[in-house]
Image (cartoon, rainbow, N blue to C red; front, side, top):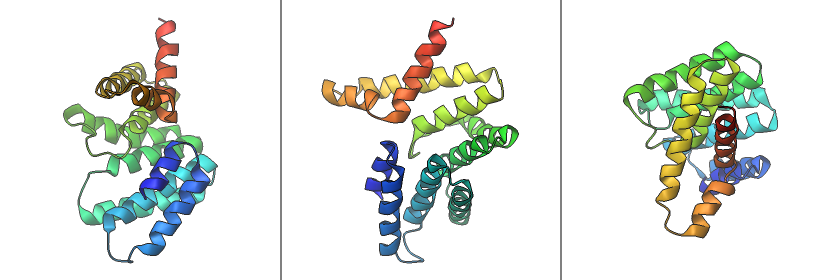
Length: 185
């Protein structure tokens, strides 16, 4: 699965699906629930990016059902953010906002430690809030940018830090949106 996650983060969603499929074939049907959740969430992300929204919906529903049955919330925000992106892709802004509200409620008292892609979750929240013309969008984007910069500051190797900021698509997008919004002030 880690290779599938990496390929997804690099925008290679078809390859990510291939790696996820291979991982599913190696997992026992009733073992390694956490990997099953990851595989379904990752498949949902990839199918959404590829425009196959019905398959994405199916994968996200499987992921949520697994998380609910495990009664373990770590990672559920990745799945909720995926559902928000899916709803946005379908033009269902109100539905997307309901998923984001659940994430934002959690962020009022918690954080995204343990999330697979915390920056993508923040970016999704920003995008959904923007689509709904919600004034919380700018603050959410600033939070994402600041979190990203904090993480980058902890990377001692300059080359790795630059790669983290420039080569990961979601990180690039957060920086671009933040700079664009900052220039409009």
